[in-house]
Amino acid sequence: MSKLILPTAWDTVFRSLQKGLIQGSYIRTVNFHNTTVNQTKKFESQLAFLAKHFSAVSEADLDAFFETGKWTKDKPGVMPIYFEGYRNNFEVVAPLTEKYGLTGWFFVPSHFLSVPVPEQRAFAKAHNIGLVANEYPDGRIAMTWDELRLLDKKHVIACHTKTHHRLTKDSPDEELRREIVESKEELERELGHEVSTFAWLYGSEYGVNPRADRYLHEAGYRYLLSNFKIQRLVKAW
Amino acid sequence: MNEEALAHFIQGARALLSEQDSKTLAAEFEEHVKYCRGRNYNQEGIPMLLVLEDVSGSASPPLSSGDPLYNLSLVAATELFREQLQQEGRDLRPEDIFSILEVVAERYFGFLSSHPEHY
Image (cartoon, rainbow over all chains, first blue to last red; front, side, top):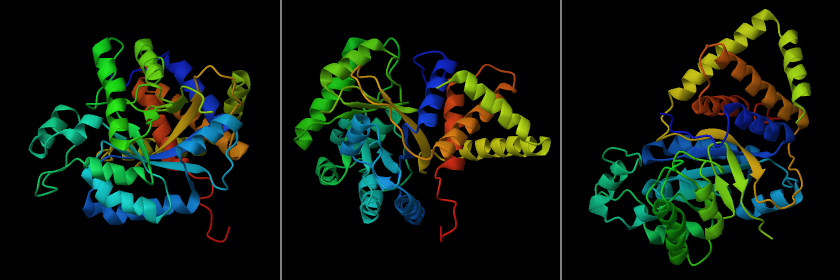
């Protein structure tokens, strides 16, 4: 069975994407997961390239783009996206992202950060969080809440469900509440401010499960990031 | 988007491409797909293009950015690559949309990025 679920027919989704591209209603992203120290050079040249040709994108930049219909920065926007809340995201690429003046978007499954260190690898394995062998002698692979708070000062922290969860058309309400609402509450409690952007494991978009959409609205998310789109759920201003 | 106009545009682009160019493009597309599928998604940065869509129900202006001809080229590329996948004679899967977009992103990520330094 396909891991990706489309909200409508293939052609309808594809045409909607073409429509966005032809209008210039799109943004560039580079999606990262594990960012291990042995690849630092490669990540640095990639981020240097992005910084040379593109502009940083904050949530406020997205808000302004949606509100005005115009991208006003002199270069097109690019979002380096770091998924899963890995320790190596904090230690390896966050400093490089800052060095080159870009804004990182850190999508975190909130519960991963609270899993005790000895259990983190087992949790990752059980929840489709990719692992790298023998990376850290102390066994800690998730960033800490303190590290996330440091990132929060310069980057965007977004919710990637509570347990790295995949949406289906039949996902029960208790799962939806846990993954959409509880994760947001947990992140906001730890960060001390609102978290506005959400993404599912395997990037389901709006319309795949209308009950999930209702929970996203009720929780107060502003953006849903999916495999092919960033969808604005509610006006910012 | 005027779909009829887009279809004409694609047909025109097809007609303007020589047989050799079409073959070259098809071969390059296959190479790019292979390259993209061979990447380690767990440990590499994967370029992508994400379309912005307002589902809030509030009135908002249409979003536009970039060079219109470059944007048109992106759409032409997605269409040509889709045709190529259809020629494989199987039903298109959701993953194929991902393949098309990641190949287009890999190949045409930046308008200026392939220009000479002095541009």
